[in-house]
Image: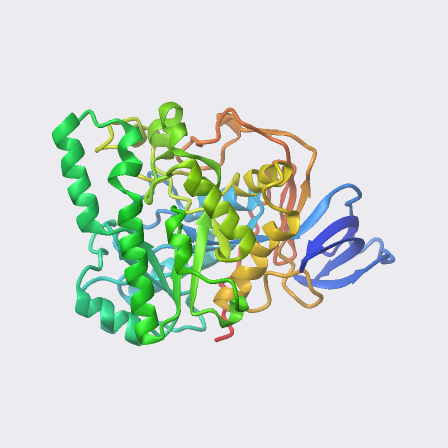
Length: 446
């Protein structure tokens, strides 16, 4: 395993910025000091002057599509795109084919990731209306959480049985992560727009079909269940300003029982973008109004929303280039999540310290991830070096996603990822990936 000395980068960590040297050895952050003497010729020196060193992003919501949907993406391809975007760890969702609804199927995904993943990994256990006994066997020290779709999903993963929901919230051995959209509301809205337009429903109707009402009704129900049973609840991809009222910011994150996530697309796009982007920004929950986007941004800064993720969910271009009802929801984001957030930094929306807090520190705190998420001596060397002033034009030829497209195509970001380290290994540098690097399974101090 290589040893590296990063010289005079601006380290952004735990609410501060400081210029210093950092040594990586044996997979760990070995030393941080103002000046470190190089151990030549035994370590590689990386000149970091003018660059910014951040803890690697931890993405708590991705869909890498393996097994069963590998025409859209694979653990190997999507984890390569992730490390190119500065994401060093991810947590993947269970709505693959077959759904990860048994401990054996869940273990199959871990086994596959050990073979091919370029980044560190964990996989959520899936819940359905009839697998509570399997959910209760989940090991909280080795599995990131239990995923509950309180809205439509792939296969048998819509959990709409009240008795089952009560059981999950009462007995889950670990954190419950929820997709919250009220299915009955969505079905009624769908019927209304289908009657009005037939199959020619415009994509601008998406936030009206998967409405703010549907989101709030489901999110508030989840919050009520969590409060009733004392469950540890994490509500994913908040898409409305109204939902912000469900969360508080008057206690430390480590003491919160109900937490929230914002996603890149809800922080970036608005419903005004459907006219140009169409299905390419069709996600569930839907991108909504500018008022909703501004409310979510404000909630990130006020700490009512605790983490930022991608909900990376690729589909093929052929699938996306269909009419409204046929085009699936979701899109690829991991390669450009950090550049997008750095654009928001340049725009004055978020500070660098807040970006690091919401994409690294708070993930480690919220999920109780062992030995990651901070730039500290003795911690795993999961690091990303960025150039805030190196433009990045998003072109199809440079995309690493298996699906081969991006909602950001044609956009020029102001900042770029220069290097990414996973467990002290230099997995990405200036557009090139070391395909020999493998990530590790995340563990949790629970």
